Length: 270
Image (cartoon, rainbow, N blue to C red; front, side, top):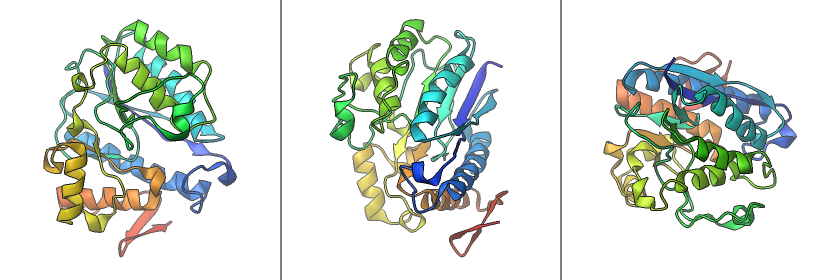
């Protein structure tokens, strides 16, 4: 194993601990993310170039933050002292164009702004005192073999004392790691690798005003995007339906899931 496409599919035990998708409940939310994983893997098979293997991190956890905390160590072990390149994809992403990334980048990297584009709100009061004027999204990130151990060590400085009181802890840490290599945001920005599609629903995919607004925000064209990020915490069912709609546009095919069916534009649980 040398090149890895990694994802995390974790089950939150208690519906009362859901920070997002609260009305859906823990069991259905897990089913939705499991289905996102299915279709994302198919898009990866279709569009990621080279020889590589999947690694799916699976854990049962108490809350979202425990997922992120656990993932930090799981990916570090996967990197294995610089033996493996890793492209990590959140399950609410989707690949729509060919990607050739393995052995192409030298440093740990994220690729595009998050929303909002500056670290703000409660997360800006993180216990580490870290601030990021140009705040990049951690939904797609690349860990090359050539990544410096010093960058990992910097991350571990914060990850060993995980801030469970805010949402963006992993994203804050990853920004700090990345910017330790080069503080110029323009060195990192490659928005086609993580095109942000906020508030995406299937019926907006053919809405020129919506797409125009996204293109302006991302500073690139959706047609040029390689990976889109659909923000599943803002609505897991709509994220899955949008992945399905994108798959249909790309392939002309319906998608058959293991645990859900898509009937008349709605998710039905088997």
